[in-house]
Every structure is written in structure tokens, then in C-alpha cells.
Length: 112
Image (cartoon, rainbow, N blue to C red; front, side, top):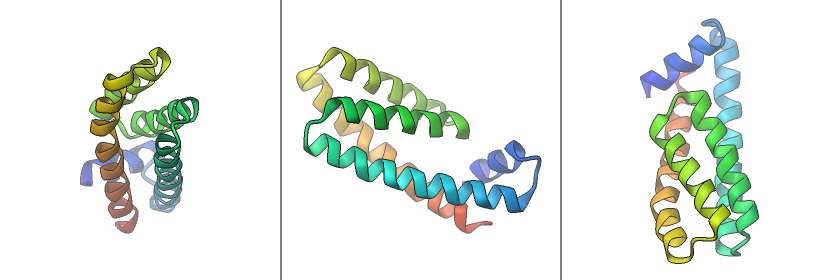
């Protein structure tokens, strides 16, 4: 968590007010994306799942979360290929990681 806090501060020239605003925005937007992602998965709207995976990819890239970036890219690729059971397994692994990032972003936001 401290690493993400420092990462946010560094991205905004160590200005704590701007970092706090960025943390709030990332937390709120990520939570909305996760909620929308889960609904799209439930309703099997794969184009939307891919779109939310890409949005989450952007957040992961901004935060320097390399493992999540790789996972998002795998999800996007698999959704483009319509992977059936492989898609279901990958999403089963992906969703908890994405939800965990939500919890981390909330804790980081509270440090500002």
C-alpha cells in the first residue's frame, strides 16, 4: 500500500492535495468499473467485459501493477478469441485480483 501511495505522489510532483484527489478518483472509478465488469460477466456481454478489462488495465498501468497489467492483457486477448471454458477459468482468477485492487485503492485513498 505504501508503494502505491508513493507512486501516486511521484506522479503528481509530490503534491499531497493532488495525490489525494487522484487517489479518490482512481478509487471511485475503479469501483464503478468493477461493478460494471461483474454485471457484464453475469450477463455474458463479452464486448463490455473486454472494455472494462481495458479500463482496469489502464489503472493498473498507471499504478505500476505489472502482474495485473499482464492479467488484463490475457483477459482482453482471450475475450477477443471467445475462449469458452478457458475464458471462464481466467475470469475466475481475474475477478478476485481486480476486487483486491479495489480494497487497496480504498486504503491508499484513506492515507491522504
